[in-house]
Length: 121
Ligand SMILES: [Zn+2]
Image 1: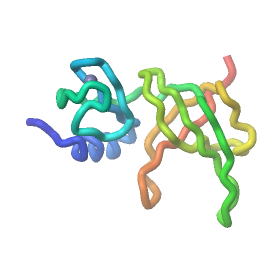
Image 2 (image 1 turned 30 degrees about the vertical axis):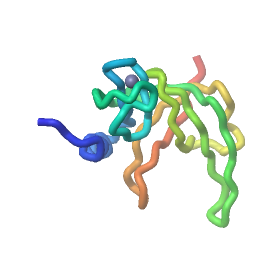
Image 3 (image 1 turned 135 degrees about the vertical axis):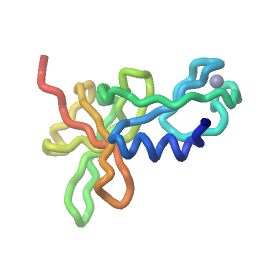
Image 4 (image 1 turned 90 degrees about the horizontal axis):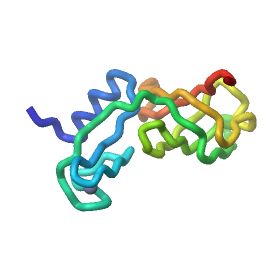
């Protein structure tokens, strides 16, 4: 049985996993759902769950009427860069290079990736 990327994404969401696609032809990886590889054009894409571990690549604090929240780009161990929100700390306390653990949070209107800071060391 072959699932569509959307079905794969739905399954990953149910399991609370951060997901990515891997091109079996050129090895490119993307966090976004594709039908063809953005690098080589192959349609031989397989779907994987990330372990969720990564490092903050960039971080910013968004201020809105709901308050301040973090928006970070995180480089996952699998080599995929994803956007998410670091929770559990003051948004201004998130540092580039910090080790984080991510999961998919399906509690809101839109599923989103949330990260928590890993303990030092
Ligand atoms: Zn490719």
